[in-house]
Image (cartoon, rainbow, N blue to C red; front, top):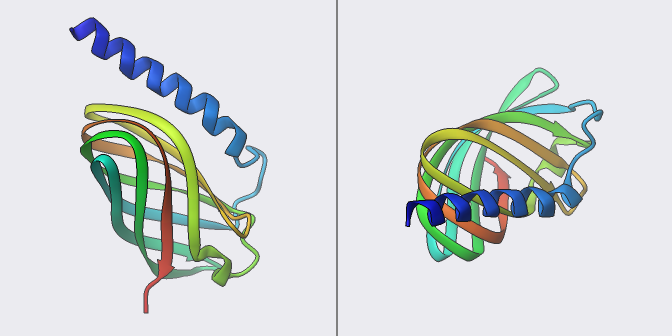
Length: 149
C-alpha cells in the first residue's frame, strides 16, 4: 500500500507540473511587487482556501485577504506560509481578482511549496514557501485576492 501511495503522489506532482507549465510566468519577467501570505487549504472533493498577508508595491505595504474554491480529487488539509513575486502589475488595482491554477500536489507532513497563478488582468503570482499538513489533490481552482480596507 505504501508503494502505491508514493507512486500516486509522485504521479500527481508530475502531472500537475506538466499541466501548470502552460500557465507559467516568464522566468525572466521583472517583479513589479512582492507578496507574503499565509494560506490554509483543505477539502474533500470540493476544497477551500483562506488566508491573508502583505503586498509590497512601490515601497509601501498593503494588507490582502485570500479566499477561494477548488474542485477535483482533493482530500486533506495544509497550512502554507509563502512569499514571492508579482509580475505584470500595472497598478495596485490590477492585483485584485481571481487567480486560477490547474495542478496536482501531495503533502505528507512538512515540505516545500511552489505555486503559480494568473488573474484575468494578466498579473502573475509566483509563490515559494513551506507547508505543513496532509493532502493529495488533482484539481482546478481559483484564489481571490482582495486589498483590505
